[in-house]
Length: 257
Image (cartoon, rainbow, N blue to C red; front, top):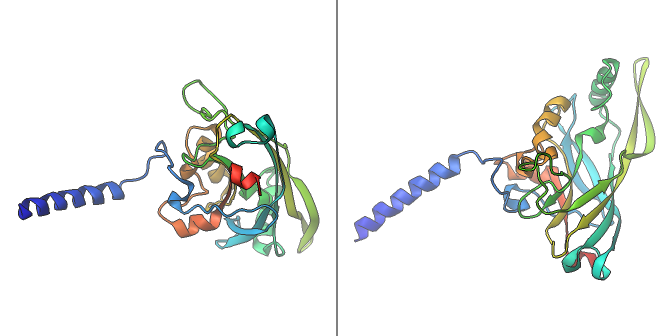
C-alpha cells in the first residue's frame, strides 16, 4: 500500500512540475492582482514610489504617484459598494529628479524624427482600471460582440489629456529638451449594483521601446487579454512586477475612510 502511495505521489509531482513550467495563457483568469507580484498599496493623499523603464537607458526610472482627489456619489447614498454608483479619482505622477541626460537625448532624437508620441516620461506610465479577481481591463468596451468585452459593465470616463505642471528644460549642446515634472489626470468610474472588485492603479513598463510596448499592450487596451499579458507585468518575476504596478482597491471600506 505504501509503495502504491509513493508511486501516486511521484506521478502527482511530475504533473505538478510539468504544469508549473508551462507558459501562462493570456486568456486564463488572472485570479488575483497579487498573483504575479502586483502591489495593492496605492493610497489616497500619500505618495507611493514606483518604477518604469525609459528609452536611452537600461536603468529603471523611479517615479511617485498619489491619489490627490477621491469622491463618491450615486445610488443608495454612495459610489460603488453594494449600492452601485460612481467614483471620481484624480491621480498625480511626479518625477523626483532632473531627467536623465541620455533619456532627454533619446526623446529629442524621436522628436527630430517627426515622432509625436512616446517623447515624454508619462508616455511610459499607464493608469490601469481593472477587476481585482480577473485582471480584466475595465476601460475597454465591447468591440465585436464576442471578445473585447467589459463583462463587469463598468463605465470609465477619463480626461483626454494629462494636465502638465512644473515645466523644466534640459540643455544638450545647442539644443533644449522641454519637459514637465508632474502630470495629473481625472477619471470617473461608474459601477453596477453589487460590484466590489474595482481597482485603479499606476503601472510602469519593463519595455523602453515605445512602439514595441504599445503593440504588446494593444490586446489589453482592446479588452482581449488581461493585465498579466502586458508590459506592466513581468511574468515569473514578482519582485520586478511589484516595482512596476501599484493599485488601490475601491471597496465600501475604503470609501468610508
